[in-house]
Amino acid sequence: MGFSAQVRCNCYRDGKTKPFPMPELESHFLYSPCHPYWEMIGNEVAYELFENWFWHEVCEHSGMGHYQEISNWPEYRAFRQGLETTGWQHFPMLHRYLPETCDGSMPVDAVGKAIEELAHFREIAVFGTNFCLVDEETGNVVYQSNASQNSVIVWASNIGIEICLDNEGYFIIQRHVRRDSAAQQTDSSPHVFFRAKRFEQRLLQPELTESQLDGQVEYFNPDTEERFRCNIPVGGSPIYQRDEMKRYQQGIRFEHPRLLHVEERKIGAEQFNKVIQGLVAICEIAIAFGNPVCWC
Image (cartoon, rainbow, N blue to C red; front, side, top):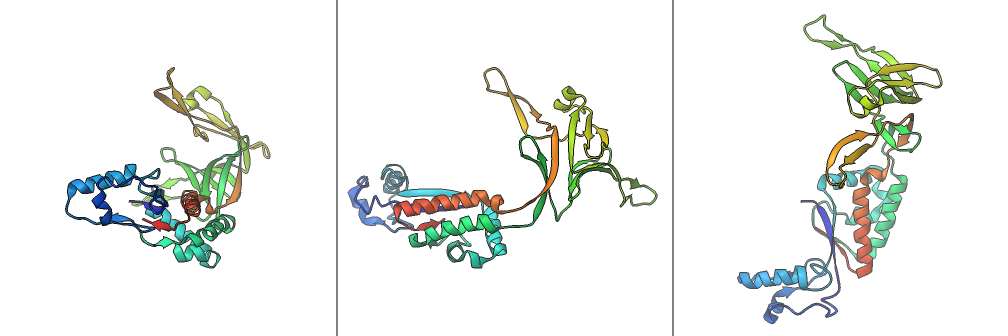
């Protein structure tokens, strides 16, 4: 079960709903801005009639309102932790009304300020930096590595080669495993085959590389004219192939960017886009209906 929210419409209050399926059922209906419900009276047939009316017939809004799925609970808790790390003092309305469990509500007079605070969070949140390998022709990030963690982005364990990113660029190394003891140990001073802040990827056997059959690739550093050949390409976005009717996936190829460079980028609130977009959407609905946001 995920983290969700809902806002009730005003159709019942304004007399715009369809009549109850059985008039006598209305006396058992308790309306509230957050959780209208029907009192159980032990009549399963009547209950089924009510459920169908409430969710499918009552008015133009299913269940008398708008329901918004925001995220799963781990994503939402990570978002709350991001707000706390940035500083709750910047987000007093969110601090007051965002729930820790699936209950409670945010009054309609608070949602406008909440939207402003979500926008402010996008502007000021910084959670460290990433080293990013960028396709120069598209600007797309092909690989990234957290600056505070291990920089390895590709590990070819069969040949002991690692491809890494750090503040000095993209580099390819080989770690030697010493077998002179009962417990194997990895050499702390690996051999560096190639390093560059910007480089060109040349597919020497493009048919094999694009078919994922170990085609040879040459990396070229234009600043030092250093070159290195291996069969580990930098793969970009997938390319999906379909039959003539465009119905069946026949295989997957990957783009192989030609020109690349490494840059350091800040990690901001973009990792919480799903949660933020869901919250903004339900807050805008609350403003339109003039009713509170109810967490569920």
